[in-house]
Image 1 (tube, one colour):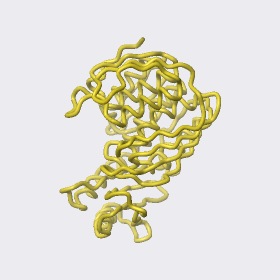
Image 2 (tube, one colour):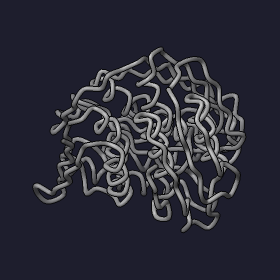
Image 3 (spheres, one colour):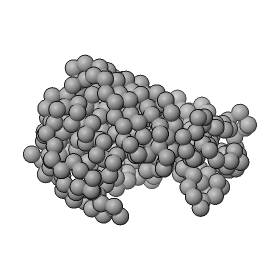
Length: 335
């Protein structure tokens, strides 16, 4: 039984622990879950991840109740199959998928998932990011996954859904040190049940930042609209990968402020020349560790990435190396 202090890692530590417990068959106990948050303990999306992980492995779980700050999880064999999980709020479907995906690659048979809840949430990878940035890279590790967005679900209304097809896989090592030439930049504004002028103002800022022509600006209205929502995505299509940066509209923040924030972040990555952005780097740590080897270049690793790497090392016989090889360029490797 691995003992884990969850006080400083938020929900990500719990999701990673669940994934690794499923993949390795190792039970764990986590205490202090989300202790530093304004609402500590398990929220609805965390509970859905725990319940889903238990379902696919017939796990024995204690402490899986709203607000709980401690759980124990003891899995059995992973079972592929057809599964459906509804968060019941605008909680992130993509974070639940993040928990289940590594385990389902280890199942003996393929799986189909339908996840209902939020698909475009602040502080979570949007469905577009997983589909166009993450999935093609894990496919290079011989771990294919097909993600389809059925219905957009923005915070706080939710109501979205994604379907996912996962085949059994044995992951292979991965290397991405250079991103290759930039082929195309696109700014895509999504709006749901809000005035179209919001998207137009965001796209105007993006066009100025990246010198985009009219055909590189996409204005998409979501219909049917379950609830109000807005997101601006800056999409870079390189020879070796696609990177996506997303900003979300929020009450009291102007469209220009939303756009400026995400455009600055995207420009920092673009000017750095590294292969992998900070959010995609976080997503690749676990698949790369399960493959037993790999490397990529990225920006300065976040505290989030460092704590996640340390937890992965508790479950797997691997070691991460995070080193700065020149200014604003880091190499992350696993062996």
